[in-house]
Amino acid sequence: MNSIADVRKWLMQFRLVVYTKDRSVDLDLMEEEVREAHAAGLMEQKMYQQALLIIKHEKNKLLDR
Image: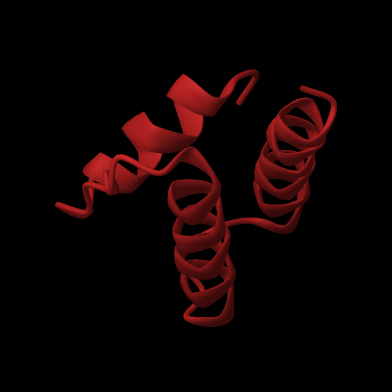
């Protein structure tokens, strides 16, 4: 997993589409879904950490605007 697009693609495997027209809310929802997937055992630790880092990086880019 290298980009937010990869996180979206991974979520789409489970029929989860996150789009609210608000980038900040989208990122929050994706983070919540990733955390729940990890807690349910659907995501390995390394992939989980990568996904969270990618989401955090995207959130920081929003704040820098």
